[in-house]
Length: 406
Ligand SMILES: [Zn+2]
Image (cartoon, rainbow, N blue to C red; front, side, top):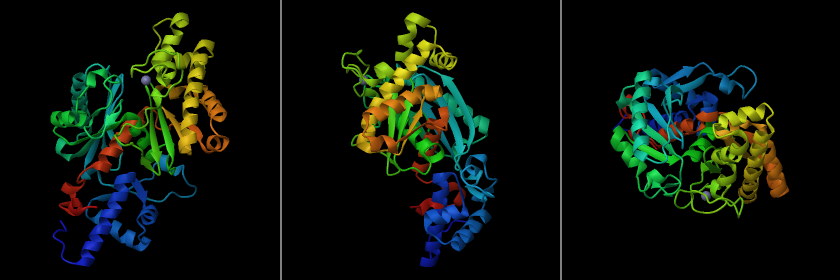
């Protein structure tokens, strides 16, 4: 079935175009013939012919339109195409400060199995790695996917990732992870290729592709949980900065006389607006047994103290976001992470501070919303990263089609 070695320029042009169709499907998961034509610049007739060939080879299948995409347009939804299940699989690993989530998906980004575990990973990278390996085995077994079908693994870590070394860029933010080369270590343990990224960047990628940021090129995604991080999307691409650690919004100054932060500075945004700070502020009045879900539940039920700490957090975050808006002029601010479940209790004060502290045009341009993917944003982003960065996806299924890929 392999097309290499190529014998003529017409044949290689067609092969190249087949790969372009596959690239669109790899990036988006599913697409109609018309969308593929739009994105590749090929004519509809050419796309139809290419798709017919890919279907005949068992690489592409037609899917019933899902609800997720129907919402976008009116009328009868077009038939969607996706890569066939047999083409391969990708794994996403989402490491939080207090949880671990692992999912396996096919190359159309559809999640086949998922597992989650509560875990304090900050102190020991080794414990985090070991648990991740167990969960990977668990989801592969649950989905019935053999290990050799996995084309790549994407992994999100809640700290700044130095791109040069693939290690965590601050010893104090993840103390148990100092000098650990996360990708290398996971590759060794899993026996699979692994690509590592900051968790907020993955949340941004997930929401940009499949959630509240679809179709938007300028996005700031905020992950507000045990820490606060931002994934910044400029011109449709994640902005990493020179060393890979851009987006550490949680360590912008919020209160000069505040508490010392785990990063070593004083009064960072995290010290006043992340979940541990909210729990600490409530400890005198509400005791120390609450978790952040309790606080959000109580706030929704009208508890004034819980409402107040969430509103104050929203205001602090809004001030930091106002600075970002003045600098970057994003079209959308997408709030994810545990605290986003508070909805407008958090977002209204955030919007208020944004209007107050940003220049009016920048504040007007920035639509503030919660994410559509909820706690799935990071793991979906990890899968998108894995598929996007896979060396040679489809190489097995095609017997060489993807080997000369772009
Ligand atoms: Zn800090």
